[in-house]
Image 1 (tube, rainbow, N blue to C red):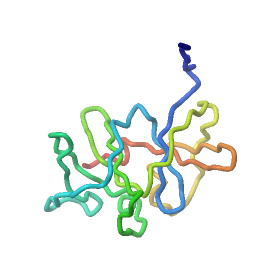
Image 2 (cartoon, rainbow, N blue to C red):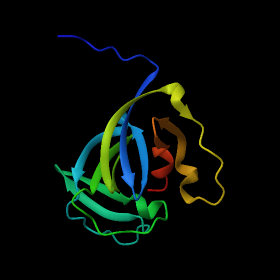
Image 3 (cartoon, rainbow, N blue to C red):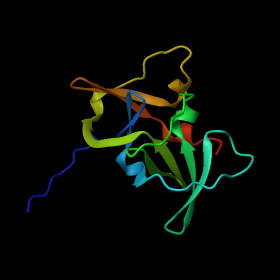
Image 4 (cartoon, rainbow, N blue to C red):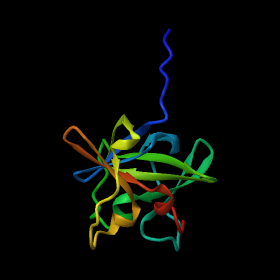
Length: 148
């Protein structure tokens, strides 16, 4: 049985999709990936907060990332997933079009986010990762979860 040691330079990322773009968040912030289930609407919440679900006895708020990023919404499909993320004492579900895979990237592969004028999600971007022909947008969860 071999033990794979992870260097300080490696970062594990969960990669997911919204429309035709790939986004990533560090795997250590992800609790689980679930299929979309019935969401109970909560009155007087921002439009991107779709409601709450009862996940194994824990009431968890659900955010539609398309809505949060001002991307046109679509009907859920078979590949729609809810990524349950945890940050400090918050646990929140993020609705995404598909959860693609888990990648190991070296920290030096992360480039600062490009200066994009007028893009709503720009404030949520922590950097970009170019890997082969893929471009992954690394998200700042703390900014996405602010004001929830």
